[in-house]
Image (cartoon, rainbow over all chains, first blue to last red):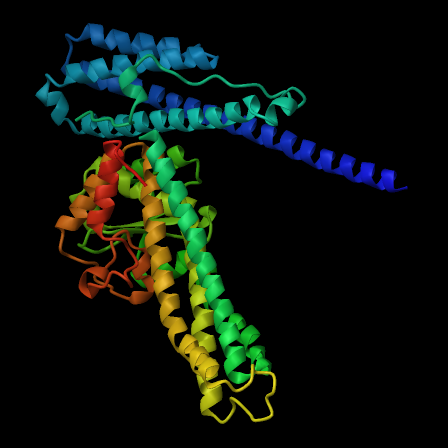
Length: 185
Length: 306
């Protein structure tokens, strides 16, 4: 009788631990997916700003075909990206192209003075910060998930919960990976 | 740098626990002193004190968003009124993973800001017109991150708990004083009050008289501690200590203070409207700006050391 009670208690405790671990892993995994969705939302917002930006710059800086082309192409490439790695690569390329275009815009005082451009600049600065904070938030979540999945006891439950380590969001631009500080002015 | 703001957060969180534990023990000591001084039957006043303190603070905690907005005259605004401010706060929201708070403006030339709300879903961040005028984008981001950190760290709840505990102590002390005054107090037939050792009686009286003072010291200390924690958490959000550091420097160069100087809402502002004139570090609700600036500089240079 005593053995029955003891084994019942042990089984119950194990079940509680297993359920807590399982739910914890699912929660972390969903947190990562949600954080990635946030990156995509912000990337789409940035993408939506580009046609307007290109039109505005074109109006003043007709000779900067190269920088404009680079932005348009990077934007087109970004739309087809799916995996974390591809999205990050396309994001990095577009970030660089945009930076190039805004550097070029520096040479056109009329452009810089236009109300439309300064409004666009604020929108771009804001979106660029949001993209970079979304990356940071995603990577923080991935770090927590991976630490749990690779550590004990998470390791023993990860297979059962079908949760695996997730990929960090790394873009090729060393400057953008550091402090999210964008100054387009 | 990555390690040091985490170390600073952990240290501050530990300190909050120690301070709240000290306050709880203080309540215990006061109850004990009451029992020693006025007899064990008088411990019956404890539930009343707790009840009254809870009624007094729970309402102001629960309705903190509406109450503080009304007391400071802050006006909730929408995105079209201040698109840049909304962008800045939204950036910090994304960095923190918190829900979007309401944003409010206080018509006041003094640069200042505060956050309130009982939980992140009811969060409000208010900026004075003065702060929007003097600070650049990066500084405002630091301020927004500090305020978002208060919301994320549930500081309205922490300060409500501290206020309730301090309230219980003040009420107990006050009630006992009245009981003694109006002919209650010790009766010769109280045989359960630890004898009539005069030293015990005097000691317990001293505890009862000094406890409210100790409680308000602890409460101020908790408030300062939560400010430091909010600075550290702000750095976690933005990973950019220089934004907040430059913002605090801007505040320290500025001599104007917000017009309303009501002590009941003094603790919510990022820069206290009272402390500079009080010149009293023990009762201050905020650590000195110079100290906060120095800590952020240390984080920037990677020299922060606990």
